[in-house]
Length: 409
Ligand code: PSV
Ligand code: MN
Image 1 (cartoon, protein in one colour):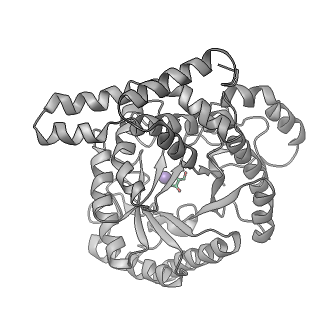
Image 2 (cartoon, helix red, strand yellow):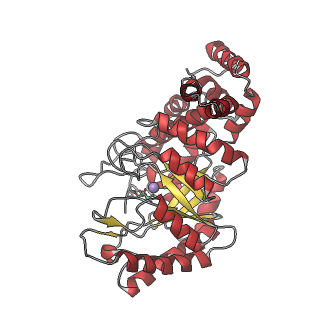
Image 3 (cartoon, helix red, strand yellow):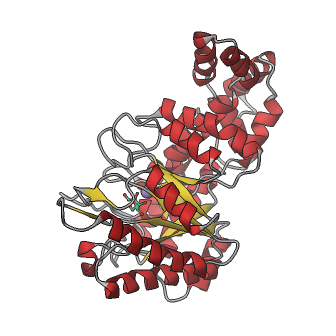
């Protein structure tokens, strides 16, 4: 489907869909408005080379510095219309002049989003960062967190997004409770240094790189840490950071009920933290997550929707565009849930009636609606196709000769 909606088949498909939405008693204009307001942040590290512990494959045209990564992120926004911000990771995206990085982003119609500290790639962190038994190493880790607050202020960001690799490999290696105490000490210092408008997003993960225990393994641990820190500390849910079979939409609902859902790292997985294109393996899960979010959004809750993926073998910008499109479609389907009928079915004990209302919404082909919304936003009807045709990648490959491609270092 390359053509715009003004011509041919897609216009008809769109009109048919709008009438069927209206027939269901829903408000097509309201739904379109919400789709236009949807935002998805992409990660700077998703544009650089990445891989597994076995091999990092290099791709032609990969950005060599944070400026080029933001230029690639701007392409995703250009074609999707809903991804105007990019998260950065420090020191992967460290630069001399953060004001210049901010200006560069703004000149491309972008802004810098969450600032991610990196407390997992330094020799000193062998036994942990903010949980390390050595006070000097905890000081170093805390200083890095404070540096990230300064960077966030300079780039105009109001979010620190924190993931800790801290954990142990063997039972008995260290004390759970002492490690938690050390962590709270360091994170309190970070929290106190954040200006009033800034939020701390705390991400959890049950495994990897530590194999016996992780210091923030799950949503409960993250939530209680946030509760100890203060209201502006909120939990971040990365879809790859759960054990098999976990009901993530229920976690979302719980965190919302506690007023502590801060944001998402969207991606897909089959086995572990696979960081695959979101929606490639988990479209129904995504839909159900958005269904849980609808009311919270109406109440004006501030939730950050971010992607956290590594595209190891697939073309990176295309993969990111496809991810954003998948999120747009999942959100559109969630908006099609007849929530009044769902509530009635639930209250009357109509088990399958309620279930079918969800199925009905999820089975709807929302692509004509998403195409129309992208057109309204000045983006591309067929984002991946338009990007391919634009010649951007060929030009970037020509221009980005020499230098070191960005990666996990
Ligand atoms: C850890 O697996 C993680 O999800 C964190 O968000 C990191 O910042 C990111 O991946 C790094 O790739
Ligand atoms: Mn993550």
